[in-house]
Length: 336
Image 1 (cartoon, one colour):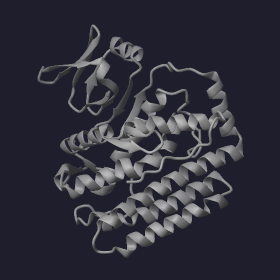
Image 2 (tube, rainbow, N blue to C red):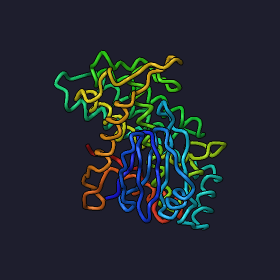
Image 3 (cartoon, rainbow, N blue to C red):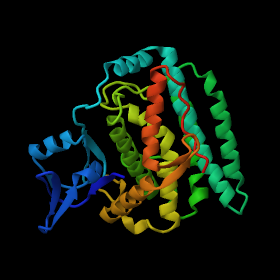
């Protein structure tokens, strides 16, 4: 199974024959077999040349860049190697057909709300204190999900998803029960407390991982359905991430906090007033993210085990079949 390469140290990234190597600031050289790499995430000051980028393009490897503060900066997205004009036309047709776009966008929101419900149900079943707030919140979200059929515009769908997420976020303090990680309210740019910093960082990783998987399909990442195709470069990955953030990001955050793998010492305050993960905190988060992505689960439709990372690609294949009119898209629903 290929893996994501995370570069958190400053240095030089180079090609040597048919492999890669990284030289850190201390002169230590690490060789990295290209066959083992799925994509690359860079979180530090790294120098490289066009020879390296050309090599990565030949191997169809995306490179995602994050700035000093851990914010996503951009992606080196090699020229598409899976070109299919027919799929692009069909994807555009769905976007331009209001009813079809609304239907597909509604499926994304429905899938997102289901996953949030599953997270709450998971913790209701694990808790011994019969937490009424968690149960009531799961029921409220079920009502919001049932009413999605009444939405007449994309904006109404977004509002419903936002309302469901507010209900969902109100449960975080009940789940975590740690005074160092109080939710308060969702803040992004910058995140104003440690929990928001974890959510923002985790969501950013999720978006970029899905972008890497879109590159390996015939879909165009610029054409989303829930998130408008406008001046942002990519939007389809944001749509798909709505389904996976609760189980891929939020569940991981709860694990890291509850097992005390991440504590308040792993954060630092910026001059802007924001709170961000420090270098050590980011490394821990990335290590555990990769472990989670490589973990396998039973897939009830395929009848075999697949990795969490593979679930992203399988979801994209389903969307592609829906766009082509081969099979109606049903969002992934976790049972755990």
